[in-house]
Length: 507
Image (cartoon, rainbow, N blue to C red; front, side, top):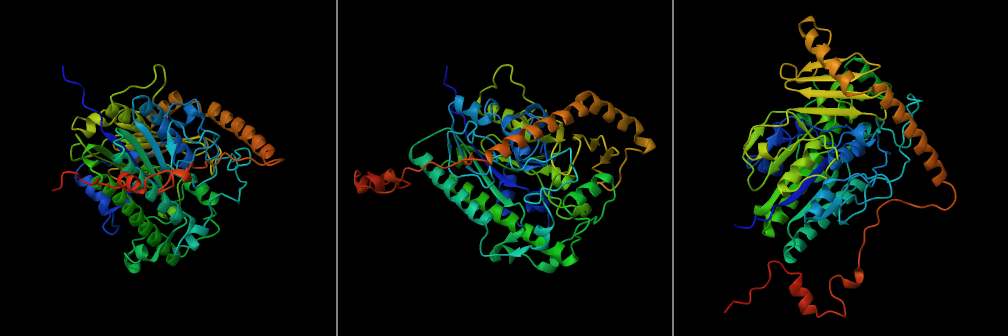
């Protein structure tokens, strides 16, 4: 019996706040994303992939654990991600993969690795409990970090920003590690390369801004939706009192498009390193995002809602065995953990709940097994849990303090017609409402959200007193053994760090 072939490497490239609607890879006529498009041209493009929570940290915790937000209490951007929850990095590490993270993952709490053997950069956001919202005072803004309209009003160009510096470091460190994996013959490996762009602020370097004709930038289809959920979110980000002008909207979208192309260039840099190091043919490459951006649609900006531009994410898979195709069946980020495990030929811990379904058989030519996406939102700009069910062509959104929303996304892709009270859809709306009631205990979830918020605010207040400490990740670096040092032979160091290596067979 022949031995089983070694599983492929896995490289996941993640954007922050990238809606697929605004990419050339998904059909936008203006936005240039040639590297994403090249991957889609030789792989599987999932056209109805969703995040499970339209906010950075909850989405990422859910994605890494394969579990929904309410199961792991990953409610908001200051929810601790417990070290006891297995992630795909734990499972892959146990299966023999080298696991590595370069860039953002927004871990909150003292564990800043969560199964990764090494982390090449610090995070771009704080790891403490400062960003805890207060559902008991839902109209009270935390002005230090709540979104407002400054990102829209101040959009434009700059030579550098903290986000540009961060993404440059993230890409550099990832590329270097890819070549080191090749030189050290480390395989299989799982490398996550996670960028902050095109997340607001909407500020781009001039060379990316100049890719676009400013007057050609398309504008939102709907500028001012009047449903209670949209109105509440506009109030939360102050868009109800600071109404952006046409010029400001165009500038913000222009910068977002520019930064999307910038992110796409980093996709090209990572894939290029895999190709140059001879590892591309044995690597499954995945491109996705933690959530999208409303970018002015419905008069909304940023995320925090289950409308399409906020909740849908790009999901492109390419690599050995993947069949070129587009997949219409809904899926979500929790499906990536079981997908990775199937690629690796391993299984989750017995008894550990997994809310996702593997997409690997579909990506390699089989019929879709996963046909729905489930979403939960329990963070700022809300006072009660918000739930989403996407199944087939329909999406249903429920919140205890809002009227229900039902959309036919094939007939109404911009979600302008709420069918929840339409007599022709009464049976469907009732069925979705019954499913929500059966699936979630909204009152119990809200009580638990408030309880954890109280706990976290108390801990955070105490940690501000006395000696200060930090959970922020400090990357390890051994400068005494970098480049060339006196305890090394410089010719050996040069040979060890050269790729491809010098051939000894040359005549």
